[in-house]
Length: 88
Image (cartoon, rainbow, N blue to C red; front, side, top):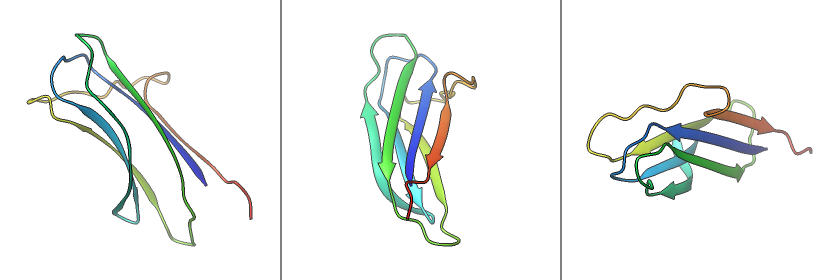
């Protein structure tokens, strides 16, 4: 499978933002990690490929350390998750 996750964080000029992929509750890979630029929203898109067996599950986590609460934008064009089966 190939997994793609896009997160858009509200504007804030401090700290870092990151996307993580977990498989069965454990860290599988760290995706994109960036520092925000100025006071505009921060967009991150990360992709990973992983093999899955029956009952395996995937989670996507967003991370930020701005020093306070920071929302992820809830809009169809801003925050998304997709999974594609690559075949046997």
